[in-house]
Length: 239
Image (cartoon, rainbow, N blue to C red):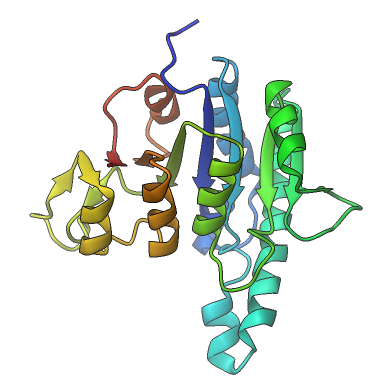
């Protein structure tokens, strides 16, 4: 077994990781491809918890609030979208042979367990992947904040923010060929630069609890394996 630097991780995914053409909906082939990447690090002995967004199904700020919907209603709809994504990912993981539990911040007992911190840790200790759906269960909080919170609660050693870009840049590398790439940033630098990797609440929570954040391109080969082995990949944000 490879030498591991991180044995318990929180993987934060955007809903687009499951999306079909145009960034919308759930594509079973994408779920299968994503599950394969998670399975590889599970087989290395890593305990994996996951938070996935719901932007492929619902964007409350755009789809709801721009048309006059109440923020609380829009956020609750977003939470339910993350539950749908969590179930799709659970199905894909279990078809790859990884026992998986979905735990949610709002109760939907027919399809998932309510979130209980000690039970979540016990699932991880038994080798199950755990997917946290429905965010924190509260409106006005993003899934980034939910990822930070759950990472603290389960005593994760690192938070991996999986994106479509390979690192943090000082500007959009697709628009600016001279954008500066960072291998390391401090929490304060990331907050001051407003890099947009995570919202400020999530970033501050990681800073206050000294939880390292890796920003990586999930779709590059062996990205997750490199992170759990402690290799240089993407951008790491620490104190």
